[in-house]
Image 1 (cartoon, protein in one colour):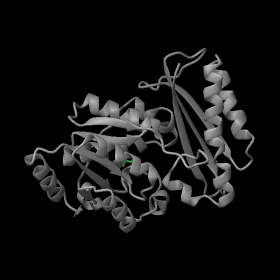
Image 2: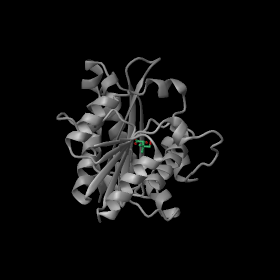
Image 3: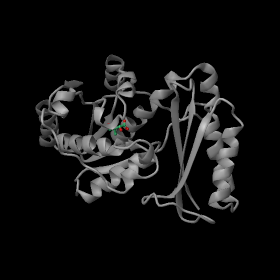
Image 4: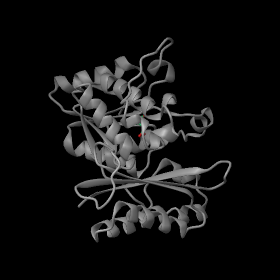
Length: 285
Ligand code: PAF
């Protein structure tokens, strides 16, 4: 597996793959890889001849320096996992390479980035869109793979790619869960064993929501079911629920039809250093 630190190196890998007629799948990550990321790699491997992964903890999508500093960095273990499954190259640029002095161009989906989760993390999706646009331009893959767990991120990236006529297809991959249903996340390692057990309540609330939706409940009742379920777990704080139309993320009300996305979050752990977990479920009625 080739480790590429510069843009020229990764472009040379892609050029050689293209010259030998191979298709290229791309998985952008921020490292600290777990089974959720590896499911993106597996999806990419299934649909392309060669897979390239990037590992870059993108500073422009973090609101606070402290969150950026705390982000787990496990480069060696990440590379071992990727090599074991036959990834062709890993692109691991420095911040200076991705954002050279004087960089000032940003990419933003003006509506989708500034609603829902974007309201509590101003600038987050702008940072995501900017770095993903750059990575798409650098790698030039046929397809790129993103988890459905960050539902809003996936819709933002799809919209950006459509609006900017990006030639890379954006592919969404279903959330991978632990045996007890907790969605896999790089943040789970920060949970105490007690909070780790408590966090299963998020998936339980989504199961209850789906049952309610399929038995004819209104959006308001579905949202209440989620809140009530999360409230049964005293270690979960600040539950947040958004139920939206798929693709547009427009709010929905009344009795739902078509495809809806349910996005939830709750905080666990110490009040002064909480671990915010998100989860999601898309339901077609
Ligand atoms: O989902 C992530 O890990 C990041 O937001 C991404 C897409 C790699 C951009 O930095």
